[in-house]
Amino acid sequence: MESFKDKQVLVTGGLGFIGSNLCHELVRQGAHVTIVDNMLPRHGGNLFNVKDIEDDLRVNFSDIRNELSMNHLVKGKEYIFHLAGQVNHVDSMKNPIHDLDINCKGTLVLLEALKLNNRDAKVIFAGTRGEYGATVKLPVDEEHPTNPKGIYAVTNLTAEKMILVYDDIYRIKGACLRITNTFGPRHQMAHDEFGVFNWFIRKALDDAEIPVFGDGHILRDFLYVDDLIQCLLMVATCDPAYGEVFNVGTGVGISFRDLAATIVRVVGSGNVGFTEFTVERKEVEPGDYYADISKITEVVGWTPKVPLEEGIKLTADYYRKYRKEYW
Ligand SMILES: NC(=O)c1ccc[n+]([C@@H]2O[C@H](COP(=O)([O-])OP(=O)(O)OC[C@H]3O[C@@H](n4cnc5c(N)ncnc54)[C@H](O)[C@@H]3O)[C@@H](O)[C@H]2O)c1
Image (cartoon, rainbow, N blue to C red; front, side, top):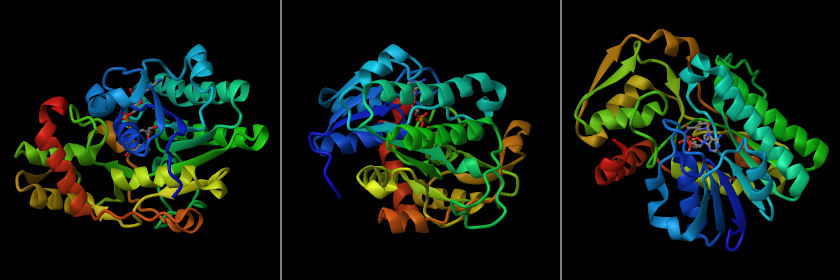
């Protein structure tokens, strides 16, 4: 893969989970990294996520919906990893206008800023497997119908379409990923409203019961964050990836009950319990999902490398060490 040494890179949402892990790798490769993040409470941003690289990048505490900021920040950037978002499925139903504002207006402000100031930049967008909604066949490939369940999934699908329209009409290159549930270090651990895998790890580390909804048979595809970061970088440097949509996952489905049992075994504490779905969760639960990743493997050459158990171990080790920054 091409190196990012001396590349000018903007990471929206760079103080969050995926963004900060990406920034660590970009800094390691010698990129000039700028983060834009608004640090809204409970939205996943954490300054500790970039503490050890804070002298090697710039952080702009602003909002992707702010036109003045974005007009300034996109200038001279070669790559824009667009990771800022409202990510809470339940909140997207309780406060849909807020979700729409960040995920759609924010994306459009970014694209307009590029149209006015820098049409040569390449945009890599982190959309979600939620765009498919309830699945009609497994594994899910990119031709599968999109029937979003919940406003978060609708606004992600809309943002993806906006990026493809700007790619088509203004030739602002955009590559769109539909990412599966991702876990690993630097995710918020304060509440269970998003990032359920990491929440399970927290429960195990606390030697508490892991509350699996329903009978736990629903299948999901869980990806370790280092694999996702490699994927983002490989997509960014792959010209044929622009103008395209790709699934990103492991291609393997595992039930929530097996996942919880695996976490208990690897972490060495906690236990598995079962609880009723809350009404709000049930409303946005799409059922079984695992991805067909043949398109991204063929076009980009990416495949995930980290086995589930190793990912759980690495994640648990991180939070054991830095628990006070996340609990
Ligand atoms: N984590 C996953 O499993 C997953 C799966 C599929 C897609 N995604 C997508 O990837 C992106 C990043 O996810 P994450 O897990 O890192 O989330 P996160 O909540 O950890 O990070 C999001 C970051 O965006 C920032 N942000 C939110 N609104 C902003 C705004 N208006 N202006 C500037 N910054 C803003 C937050 O402060 C936070 O730091 C999101 O768009 C999410 O929908 C994540």
